Image (tube, rainbow over all chains, first blue to last red; front, side, top):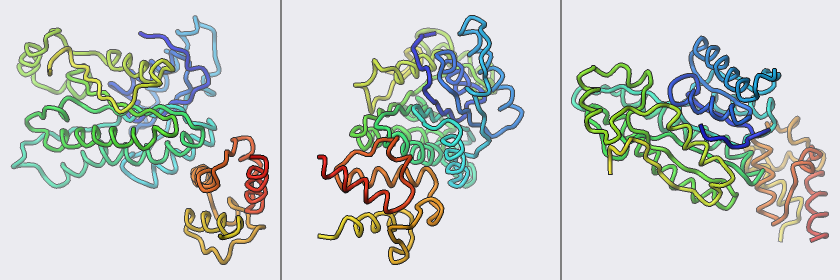
Length: 261
Length: 80
């Protein structure tokens, strides 16, 4: 993993309980950031907090730290305005600041267009697009006050090139890319950078459900001939949040093993 | 040109959706008007932009009433 110094920085990660989000939360914790981890499943949240603390611990060479001070979990549906406002308020009360926001919460409801139900469209747009809007609107307030901040949106190559059965998902991710570009312009004056990452196929619960034959077919289309790991994405997040990336905003970085060009 | 007090009250009323007529210099922004820390952050940004001043986080923490805001702004404008 990349190593940067995020001591005393407060990072909020939605969808931080598993998959790419958990990988990102662990990577930020390993760089000594304080973590506000947001999820919707109480058991998954608890196990994620343990994993994040463990990562934080290993990074300091086994010196015991008071993790309760450094890592906190929040149950929150990011598509619900009141939930988001209350959660961000709680995070501010607890940590006093927000330096980094990673919008990673995402769901799929894959169905061919003709069979797609209204709820399947609304649920995906709600979590994947309305969620980042609500989270960014709330978290950008303390960032604008502090005149510094880093926002990273986790999009998808599905939002760039489309993917059969994902009219809802690819629309949400393409929307998130447009959102990233606009918000990066609006917040640039406040020294806040906003970037997006478009992962390709990454080994997570989301892709674990794909049929084996399809996985093989996908792998054959990836020049680097493997699925990515959450760490592959987390490393890019570390770059975007680093001081060294202070001149980089409004960018969409594809991490897909060379699949799309 | 509206007075500093009028401009401050209008900003607060606009942000918090409260009635400007009920706000005075003695009004406590958090306790009387129900502003939470997100509202306060947004208000401080609005004051900074309206009056072209800087309000440090440490100064912001000492601001509780509308009068505190006006005092800070007038001090900031003078020393500018």
